[in-house]
Image 1: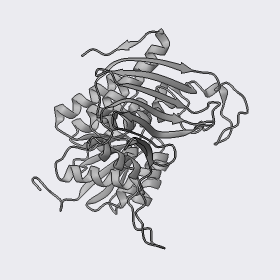
Image 2: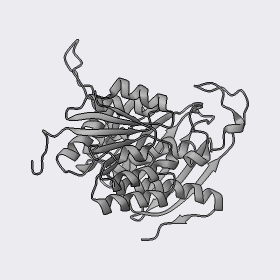
Image 3: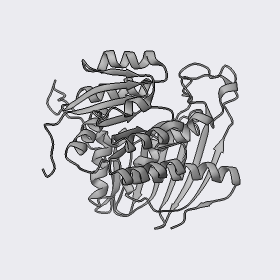
Image 4: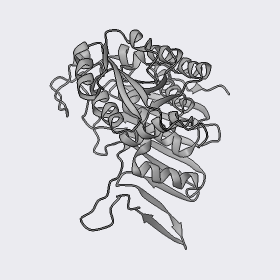
Length: 366
């Protein structure tokens, strides 16, 4: 493959050594060939030291300032796993320091910041991607192939689902509007919207209408998957909903909640309605349509097995995300999640918040 540097070892720095770094980024990077994690930073130094001990190489360093980490010219790639507010500042600094960057979702706290990140990537020529790992699930990969092959026809109506009944994250800064920019909409709604836009391959927005609710966050001693939240610290919405009209007339409904009185729950899933067929992810991946004057529903078998007592070794989404990202750097290819696509997600999320505040549609200029 042209430009392949597959024998090169990439040196990776981790900025932000919290739950998402320990739960996804570092374990998946550790499984990749041609990768060594050599630098770690967190505002809580003990977390960075723990990360370096568990995932770092022999010469791994712990930094007390991310800027010092970026000064290390031996570092090729940086993974940014910090609160939303700092995504843009650190990403831009890393790109300008000559690093390729994977930044956790959402791209940034604001659309303006996300645009600055994209501009920095173009200006520096370095690769930038956003960690939307749900694209790498087996059901997502299979459905994307169907969409790209035209099996659903023109997709003109879709729903992006990110609904929890009572699962409010009570740790870190999730409930802090200043640090995060919002609640479930920007946290999990972003995954469902990214997945839906990617399936439709439609990023041209005409206008957005939204409603954001602060209804259940003030409840004391609330039932919750991670224990009661503190109402005084709950400064973000508990649910949010958007109606998105695309330039070609297609409609997307986005629904998100951490706390909602509903029994139909599911997140990072999509419903698609096309001229030839439809699809949803409510009970596994289901394809529906009409054939020979009869309606049908099919469920593709997505397990890697097929032989009794043998499941095979199916790559998990986080590992695939890390592998394809490293390969795109080594082979000088575009990442699967392009920053231009992630920017549109951020623009739509911000438009839902804005529409809710003003009571008016937010129109996107061409």
